[in-house]
Length: 176
Image 1 (cartoon, rainbow, N blue to C red):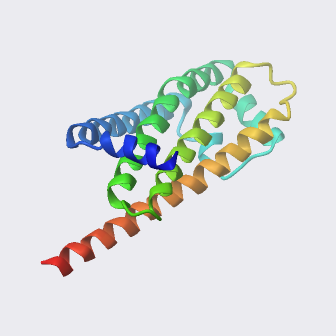
Image 2 (image 1 turned 135 degrees about the horizontal axis):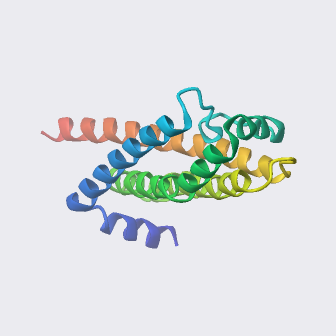
């Protein structure tokens, strides 16, 4: 199974696909700047924190009010749903190219797990932002756990890219 996944991801790793994903990555970052302006500079985005309680989440949503909660929810299922797909695929393509040995083949799942956790977080946070905020259900704990999981696998993905890039550079220097 992991060989099939690795081969599939590696086959998508063409320069045009990587370039397209890089452009989409930058476009998403610009979209997040736009969202931040609309939410306000002091907005405390739950998905940018290393965890939160249901009470903390309710306090953020109460401070935002109905309009900003609606904007946040909409961007969670559009812009912030596209972003994990973009970075997850981009990182997976790079990891697949950098780690080709038998031991490295399973590493392609690391960015895909970051992507999955981010998508779970986005859907739950959008649902909670759209719903009545008198009580934030225990679902907020799942969103918070997904946020922590996203950060862990995102960080691990960046570490893999760094280590793989350094190892690849060292291999190319010793083979010359």
